[in-house]
Each structure stands twice: as structure tokens, then as C-alpha cells.
Image (tube, rainbow, N blue to C red; front, side, top):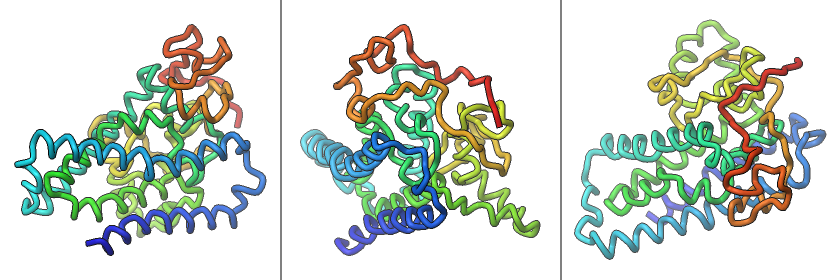
Length: 294
């Protein structure tokens, strides 16, 4: 079991390193648009989620359930694997879809998600760019801890690396899905895949600056592991193309510690939306950017 846990943790790390290396070979990090501030946000986000935020939530949930509901520990250990997988897909991945979608509707939630979108290019380092509290309050992490306590930890060892692999690949500049669109005989397979899981084409569209380019879909394509949620809930847009301009139209730059630790640390600039929980300059992510230049 310990060896399987180690493998489960190592797989996403190896994939991150491989994709990052391929992106370096492709020139992404040589003349890119990332500032030192962006790099700091990405590295800290990458380190804090798996080493601090997620473990803290798991420890707290395990303690709480052992204290209040000890009789349910490993209660569902022998539940059919299919039902266990479904439990994670619904309570983790689907709730993350709605959490993500809410952050593009609610202006206060957006302030925790904005680090993920103000960067102006893609790449695997974008994957975990979010304020610490965005993940700390994410329902899917809490539900996952509960499911593990209930006895579904073995399934989680396989579910998590698969999910992280899909998410990393969806952010990667390697654009692995291009080969599916290049060959006509693969079109039926592409049709199924792009409606089932997140791909670079569909997720890049979510990061695009404006729908005015005909490709981007900033207020849609919210899925993480499963793109199927977008299909079901009517937020899907599939073009098999990739935007050329990324970011959010409100590009007010803030120091890394303000972006990552808001609202614990707030901007000293009154004109910034991160100056307070509610300001007169709050960015409305649901408003489409209308000035696009190819």
C-alpha cells in the first residue's frame, strides 16, 4: 500500500517535469511573458497545495470524523469499485466544476481565482495558480477526504493521478490533442474524447481573452477532469482550435503575496479590486471583453 501511495504521488510529478521540459524545448520559457512575480505565484502555488493545503484538510477531516462518526471508518471499503469511482467523480470533480463556475460569476470568488487567469500565456505552470483560500474552501478536497475515511482510499490512489494528469495535459503547451484532429480516421475518437475529458483545445478556450475571437470561451469550459459536466450543464464550446490571446481584461498587477493570500493580505492601492472584499472597481468576469486584435 505504501508503494502504491508513492507511485500515485510520483506520477503527476514526473508528468509535470516531462511536460515542462517539452515546453522548454518548444521555447515557451525562453522569451515568455511571465514576470518574476508570475514565477513566484506559480512555484508557491505548486508547492503549497499538495504539501500544506490538501494535507491540512485531510488531517482535519479525519480527526473530525474519527471524533464524531468513528463507526463509519472504512464503512464502504467493500463497495463496488464502479460506485467508488462514481462517488469521486460526483463529489470531487463535479463539485469542482461548480466551484470553478461560481468563481466566474461571483465577484468575490473571482478574487481568489484571478491568479489563474491574469497570466497571458498557457503552460503546465499555470495549472495551480489560485489563491490559497480558493483551494482551502474547495468542496471537492473536503469530500475526497471524507470518502477516503469511509474506505475509498485505494480507489483514490488511482483516481487522483489520472485526474491530475488530465488537468496538467489540458494546460500544457504541448497540445497533445492536435494529432486527433490531424487525421480524419481519428475524428470519431476525437469526438468522444473532447466531450469526455478536458483537452488543451477546450481548456485553452476557457483561458482565452475574449469570445470575440470565435475560439475562446472565458465563461464556459469549466471542467477539470471531465469536460462532460460542461456538455451536461450547457457550458461547452468545442472548436478544435486554440486562442492566440490569453488573460483577463482587468490586468491590474499585484504582488504575489497579495494575489495568493487575499483577503488575509490586501492591496494597499485603493484602485485595486484586491484592496477589499468589495470595492467600486470589482472585476465582473461574466462581462465579455469586446476589443480584440488578432
